[in-house]
Length: 155
Image 1 (cartoon, rainbow, N blue to C red):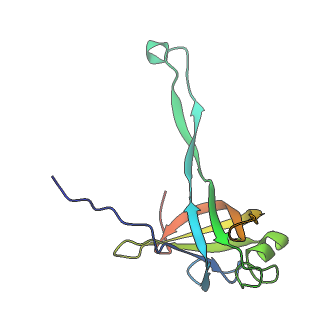
Image 2 (cartoon, rainbow, N blue to C red):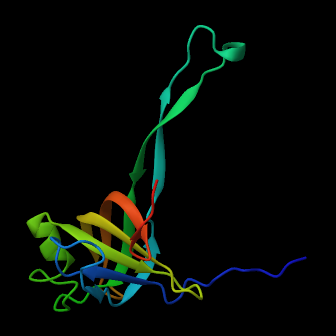
């Protein structure tokens, strides 16, 4: 039996681009500090029903339609004055300005694989429990396609 090839996710890095007008590869990135959990990006494929009167065994048929990157969500220890968290320079500014932002996700595999995506900050929710950290949950709605190692990945 083969040994596992699994990779621990501890050390995964999400970074935010500095200039939304630049291409993914040309942008400069700043790591989102104090990130806890990350989910996404999600990948979906829509289908269109294509059933017709002669469909085999009177069974519905479908055909592939459009692909979609769904959302990426993450929790942070919220530091209001930190550059990537702030209202004047971080993802809160991107939300305020409704800017499409470049994002770079670096995985913890031996090759340090990176994915580049573009997306809008669509959600930000602060958590301030009586006993606990000041946190925030951030939601990014992704748009376009994924670029691996910031090189175009054809569909």
